[in-house]
Each structure stands twice: as C-alpha cells, then as structure tokens.
Length: 429
Image: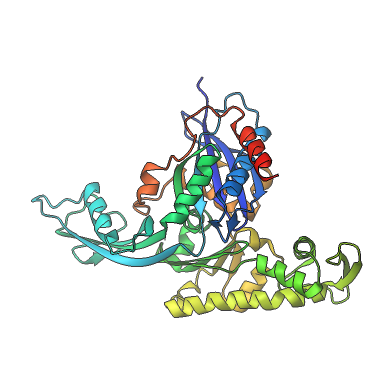
C-alpha cells in the first residue's frame, strides 16, 4: 500500500503561525488531521511578513514540531503547504460580467461560466494588486436572476455578479519567500476569512443574512453573507492584542503578564464578573507583586470591546449591510473569540443573535483539542476548502492555479528544518 498524501495547512496570523498536519487517503480521499501547533513569530505584523528570516524560522519550527508529534511510517514528508493569509492589505469589491452565447444550440457550458467569470474580474487594478479569489454571487440567464448553476440551461446572455478579493502582490511574494526559505513550496494561497466562511457558516445562515467576524491578534476580518453568498468583506487593523496593551499600560505590567490576566481572568462585560474577587500579578519590574480586582480588569477591557463592535457597526452601516445581518446574526471565530463574554457582548452591542463559529466538516476527521479551539479554525478550514471546493465560488487567480515554488520544496527534507533552524540561531545569536 502506498503512502498517504501528506497535507500541511498554515494560517499566517498577526504574530503567530498555526500549523496543521494531516493525511489524505489516496483511495477514498478522506482527510485525517494528525497534529496541530501554534508558534509565535516575530517576523509578522498584522498578518504581513516584515522579516523573512524570522518568519521562515517560525514556519520551519511549526512544521518540524508537527512532524515530531506524528511518527507515522505511512506518512510522506511535508514538501508543500496551503497558506491562509489576512491583513488590511486584502481588499475587495463587487463587479458584474456578461457573456453572449453565440452558438446555435444556446446551451450553457462550464467553459461559458469560466468565460463570464473571467470577464467579471477583468477590471483595472494597480500593478501591486493580485486577485486571490473571484467569488460568484449570482448568475443570470437572459436577465433571470437566481440561477445557482447555469450549466445545461439554454440562453443567449449569461451574466455573473461576483465578489473579487485582492491582495498586495509583494506581501504574497514575501510570505511565499519565507515558506520557500524554510524548505517548502506553496501550493495554494487562500484568504483566511473566505475559507472560514465555507466551513464555519451554515448555508441557512448565508441565505438569511449573517455576519462573520474573525478575531485575530492585530486584525479583524469582517464578512457579510446574504442570499447564499459573500457580499461584502473587510479587514481592519484592530484585534485582541489591543486588549493586552490596554491592560499592560493601565496596570504598569509586562505584556506577558497582561496577556495572562486577559486569558485567565478577563471578560468583555462587567456584568459577568464578581465585583470583589482579586488576582495577583507582577509589576513591570518583575519583582513587586500587586493585586487587582477582576472587575477592574474588565473595566479596562470593556471600552475596547465596545470600540471594536462600534467600528464593525459603522463599517456595516457605511457599506449598507447593517440590516442584512439581523436574521442570521453574528458568527464569531478566531483566537480572539475565546475571550469570555464575547458572544454576550456581540448580542448586546450589535443587537443580533451571536454564536462562536467552529468549522463543521464532512470529509475531514478532526480529533482531540483542535476540535473546539477557535485558534485553529482557519487552518482547519483550509483542509475543508481544498477537499470540497465550492461550486463556481472560487474562480481563483494565479495563486490558486499554479502555486509558488521559491524554495527547496522538491528536495529531500530529511533534517532540513532542523538544519535551517540551527543556521538561523547561529546567524542571529
């Protein structure tokens, strides 16, 4: 029996890299997740690579740890990875394309659909922009809207409404270079929020109208769904790290201590906290021990939470989508969604039903702690995305078709990540 196909999904976060290692049965094509790891990365800022060697080090470390966790004789070494990207450099807009069916039989083919999607994405863009995805929203046949799949229908005019997701080309190149320096080939780059929407949002929610919020450390992804499709998306440069900085500043403590206080004792609303309970923490000098009421922590956190949701509401109002999300409500995901009381804060501040969104899988098996951990939601969603790509909703740019090879991906990787890590440690020591 041949070795299983090895899959590696990397989520390039604000300041961390989440890696998932999985295997795919060569006969049944089912995917089984084997290991996952989260690694801090000093080479990232807001989801963008600012230091290629540091990012390469983190990528190599993350994949090496995953491989060490799984010693499966039937598992081939990792040679290529699927990437999820995010950050304010990702921009989107809606457009429309039209294609005349000139053949006498007038029967619409898959090639016709490809043609109308190509026409829809043929819009002027600056040279530094690159198309990541062209997401089909609606098809029209002879002016009739609401055709989910026009292939096989007859008509003279085929039209498509699309949502186009673009990214700064240099940022994509830099992350690909970092992965290449770590010894791997990038097989696919996907916008993280888009992958999340395919795995964590139900079709019913998409039909009714809903909001997807991806809470990162330094980014907030916003996606609006209506009538079954992604209608609006936005990346904002504000995330859960701002809560940590607020606590560190107000309490005169280190960021490490502030992060611990936030994770262990923080909450989004004062109504969720006992008014008198206290916790200890070290001052910024690391020696003096201080005490603070949990309520005080939340009084520092809550204004920032209110600001974040106010910015979301303003974005929805400005773009004209505020009323659309009411029926399906808000789906909250990402590492920042683990903050206690975020669902209650969303319901109170946005005025819509809210829930935590975790990927729901059909042909992907996930076990253990990864199942309910929102930090790995995007990386896991990548596996579902490639396993069951949506019909006519991912007319991707060149990144999706050809992949990128800027490194050592085709070479033998026995000990490669370890050697590379040692090299960097010597270089920067």
